[in-house]
View (cartoon, rainbow, N blue to C red):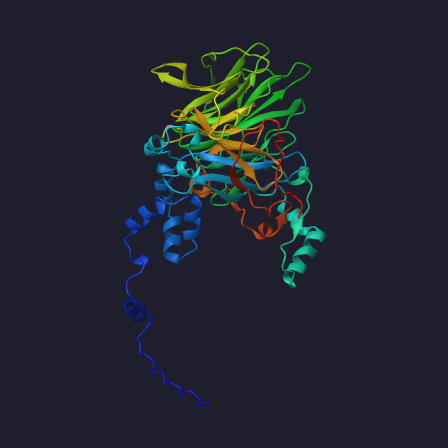
Length: 488
C-alpha cells in the first residue's frame, strides 16, 4: 500500500489582527449602534441577556442606561410565576414571554378556516410562550456559604463530582415573599411579619437591603407593604402599614424613599387592624390594596406624590360567600376580577376628569367550553395581560394554570404549569434593564448582585425544568398533579 504524499501548506502572511479581520469581511458588530439597538429591542428579555454575553460591543450597548430606557419605554407586562409553599424556599422566578410579536395573536384567517371554533387547534393559535428563569436573593447567603455541609458539597464539586449539589436550608431563615412589582423592580418582604426588607431587579440581578423600620414598644407585628413610583418627585418609594398601640391599636403608615437612610411616618391609615390587605398593585403614581370589610369589598389607595390616602368609588357588586375577587392591572388601568357563579367579570377604573368610576371591560360566560370540550375551572382568577389581539391572559390559582380567552370564540386555552410539583403564585411584571444605581437618591447604598458564588448552589427543586402544557381542564383533578417531584 502506497503512502500518500504529504502536502505542504504555505502560510498566508497577515500584517496584524485588524487586517486579518478585514479580509474576513464585515461582521454584525460593524452595524451602526442604532441598528443594533433596533434589533436587540425586538428580542425577548432572556434573548437580550444571552446577546449580552456574545461580545464586548453588545455588552457595552445593552449595559448602557440609554438602552435600558429605550427597552422599558416599549416593554410590556407579562406573567411572572413562582413555586410557592410553606415548607419551600424558592428563589426562582419564571417570566412567561411570547417567542415573538405574533405569539399572542390569533389570526382572523384561522377563524375563517374553521367554521367550528371547537376544532381550532393549539398550534393554529400562534400561542407560543417561553419561560425565562430568574433568581431572587437568599435572606442570609453568608450563612448558607459558611454551613459545614454546604462547604463540603462545594469541595466535592471542585474535586470532580459531576452532579451539581443540592442544598437543604430552613424556610424561616432564607425565604422571601414577593410583595408586588413596579417598573421592573420587586419588593420583597420577610415571611413572618411581612416587613419590606429588599428591593431587587431580577433581570439585572441587582438588589439592595432597606433600612430597618422604626420599632416601638407598643407596635404590633402585622404589617402590609408595597413599592411604587412618584412621578412628580421622580423617586421610588416603599410604603409600610402597621398597627400601633394596645389594647385598641391604630393603623399607621410609613414611607421610605429608595436611597435614603430612614423611614418617614405618614400618620394613620383609613383601615382597621382587622383588615387583611391583599393584591398590592401599583399604577400611575398610586399604590392600591384590596381588603374585605365585614359587609363589603374595599380598595385602599395611597398617592405617592402627595403621600396621602385617597378614597375610591365603591365597587359595583356586593360581597357574597362564593364570590372570588382579585385585583391587578389591565390595559394600564386598575382592574378588579370578579368570579361568581357562571360569570367572570373584569371591572376597570376609568378617569373622567376629576371623577372616577368603575366600568365593566370584559364579561365571560363560564358555561361555554374550551377548544376540546373542557370546562372552565372554578376558583380565583387574576388578570395578567390584555393582549394585542384583544385576548385576555389570566392566572387560575385553584389549578395553577394560565388561561387565555378570546372574545371571538367565547372559549379558552388552558395552559398548565408542569415539571415542578408545587403551588404557584403569579404577578404581572414588566421586565427592565434599568439599574438600581440609576434610581437611588444617595450614593451610600450598597448594591449587591444575585449572581454571586452562592448562585452556584442548587436548592431542592431548582434542577427541574418548568414548562407550559395545553391540557383539558378537569375540575375533579388535584391541582398538585405533576409529572415531576421536587426531590432530586
